Length: 72
Image 1 (cartoon, rainbow, N blue to C red):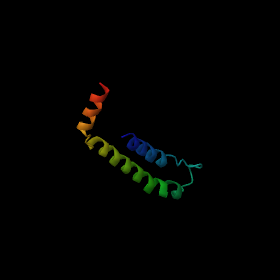
Image 2: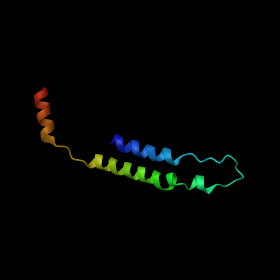
Image 3: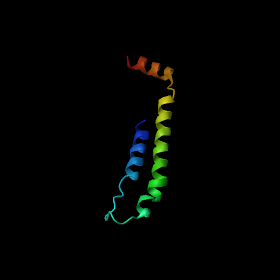
Image 4: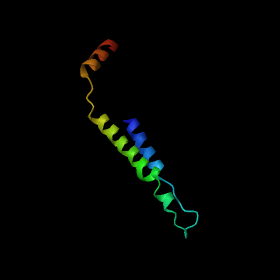
């Protein structure tokens, strides 16, 4: 789940920024770049899928029981 959270944070970081140096000048190539429009959402969706997989992944309880018996 940690990897998924890191992917989500990476998506948010790559989407950030873009302050215009001159507020009177509009530069759409800075706002609507490939990094912000395509790459960031891919990172965030991948992160969400990894987190969902981590939540629903079933652990093998027999392995856990054997591990607890050998350590006790």
